[in-house]
Image (cartoon, rainbow, N blue to C red):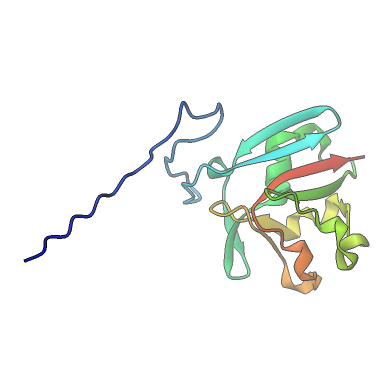
Length: 147
C-alpha cells in the first residue's frame, strides 16, 4: 500500500506591515483586503487603505468612489478642477492607448461616476459614460492629480 504525503507551506509575511495598511479587519463597507492606493499631487504623495473607505454599488460592482479616494488623501483640492491620471501595478497607463488619449487626464467632475474595487483595485465606471476597455484599469495602484 502506498502512502502519499502532502506538505503545505504557508508564507504569512516577510516583515512588518507598512504604515497605514490595515492587516485585514473589516470596515463598514465590507472590504477587508487592506489594499493601498497611492495618490500623487505635485511633489506630494499620500496613500489610502481602501478598506477604510465606504463602499457603494456602481452597476453590479461594489466600489470605493474615486471622489472619496481623493477626498481622503487631498481634501484641500476638492472643487479645484484638477485632472486625474491612472497607473496600474504593471505600469500600464491608459493614456498610452489611442482609445483613451482623448479622455485623459480625466476631469475632476467625472470622479463620482467612477470607482475602485477595494478587493482588486480594478477601476469601474458608470456604463452610461461608454468608456473603452482601456479605462477599466486592472490593479490600479496610482492616481496622479494635476491642476
